[in-house]
Length: 149
Image (cartoon, rainbow, N blue to C red; front, side, top):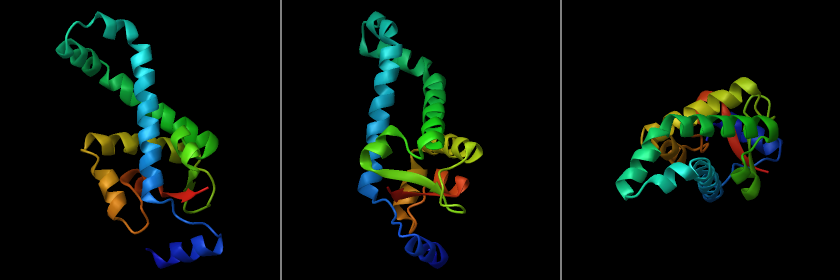
């Protein structure tokens, strides 16, 4: 880990969020957003008679689903420093520079690059698993870390 960051975390009595908590928060958020999408598109799903038709319906709303993810991530990280999944797992996002919850620009940046990371086969998340500071691509671009709350 970056020694300077490690010293700052120690001084502030903060610890990085464990990967298990981050993974659980990710799953909670994804399940929640998936249920919201299904609820919003219930009529379209009910009209699909085969699995292939359901896949077509789902694929036709990919951009809307990505926008929903960006808005969800940006709003909750801006307002609470954490998404509902992170709140449940008692972890939160902070800016490295200030050790405070991210501002508007940082929250939007983080949300957009999170979706981009998903588009690239979740490689940004894999990066975070291998990184000493556990920073994913969206954490790197936004200059944030996820800590135990």
